[in-house]
Amino acid sequence: MAVCETCGNDYDMAFEVRAQGAVHTFDCFQCAIEAMAPICEHCGTKVIGHGVQAGDHWYCCAHCARQEGTKGIVDRVMAGSAT
Image (cartoon, rainbow, N blue to C red; front, side, top):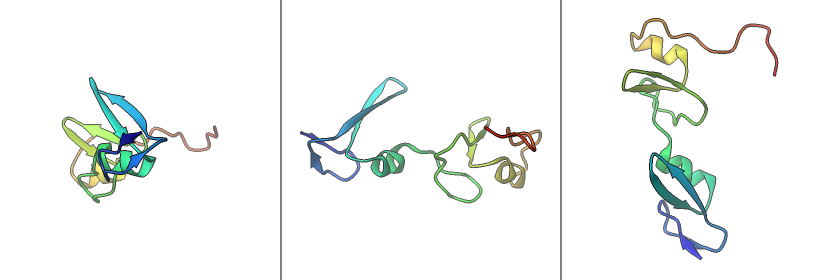
């Protein structure tokens, strides 16, 4: 059993996330997101997708980055593309 570092639950199906040289233990993805996801500096949402980074600043999307005055940020998906 391992203890989740976010909620403290001692859970037999906990998992580890390795990021930037550190190891983190969580009991669910929600706790992992709460602990590790950056926060959009414009709207305050957790960035759980790719998001965009401008210097040391994180945004959930190009729109939020532009709203904060960042220049040259565009969404990565081309119009009409499907994956």
